[in-house]
Image (cartoon, rainbow, N blue to C red; front, top):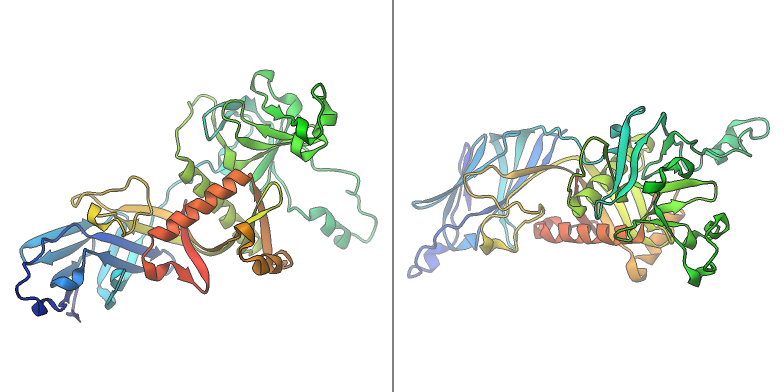
Length: 414
C-alpha cells in the first residue's frame, strides 16, 4: 500500500502472489463519507469487492473520486454541496472488513428544511389540518389557533418555589390551553378538546378490562390513564392521551401537520420518526446543554439510552453494486448509478444502548438518578420503531465505526 503526493493514491496488494489468476473486473464501489460541517473535516471510506486481490489507483478530485483498475474505471460524483480539498488527503490505509480509509478536508453545506418541524411550521391565525402520520386519517381538521405558545420545562413549578420568597403564586394553577390555544412541549403539544369540530374529534379507547363499564363513556372513564388513550379511528395507532382537564395531549411523532389548503403528503414512517426525534434532541441539547436522553414508553418502560454526539454531521453515501450488500446502505432507495451524484443527508450522530428485557439495567438505574439525563416519552410502538431504526443504521455502518466506548453508534436523518 502506498500514497503518492497530490490527489492520487495507489494500493498495491499482493496480486503477484497469484500470477495465474485473471485480473478481476472492477465493480461499482461503495462510498461512505462522514463530514463534520463545523470542523470541515471528513472520513472517506471506499469499499470494493476484495481490493486486496489487485492493484487500484484512486484519484481524489474536488468534486469526484476516480477508481481505476487497469483499463477499467469507475467515477463517483460528489453532490454539488460537497467539495474536497485533494491536497489534504492523509492517513490512507486499508482496514479489513471496511475498505480504504482516508481523512481529508471537506467544504460542505446543506441547508434543508426538516420534516414536520411543528414549532416552526405552526403560525397563529392560519388554518391547519392534522393527519395521522401512519395512515393519513384526518385527526384535527381546519383548526385555526389564535395563540401558539411554548411550554416551560417539566419541573417549572418546583423551581418557582426556589425562586420565590413567598408562597408559590402558581401552586393552584395549571398551564392549560383555552379553546383557541396550542401549547407546544418538546415532543408533544396540548389542545383544548372542547373546541375540536365533532367530525374530526379523535376516538377515545375505553377498555373494559381496565375497569371501565360498557356504558361509562363520560369524563369519569378518563380518570384511568389506560382509558384515556387517543387513537386513530382508521389504523388504531396511539396518538396521545385525553387529560381529565378537557385537554388532549398529542405526540409529535404521530401527527403530520399541514396547511388546510394542502393535501396530505406521503412521508415514509422511518424518515418521519428520525426527523422528529433528531429535532427534539438537538433542541433540548441547545436549550439545556443536555446530551444524554432516556427514551421511554407511555407505560414508563425505558427502551433506549441515547447520547447525542454530533449534530453537524453530513453523510454522503452510495450503496454501489449489489455485490456489496454487506456495504453501506443507510439511506432508503438510494441505489446510485456511476454517473449520478452520491446521496447526501443532514444527520445527527448518536451513541445508544438498547434496554429491552433488562439489558443494561445497571446503567438505566444510574441514568435515572442523574440530573444530567433528560427523559423523553413516546408511544411504546414508536420507541420500538426507533430502536429498529437505530439497529438498522448501526448494521449499515463500516465495522470499525459501529461501536464507541461500549456504546453502539447510529445516525438519525434530519
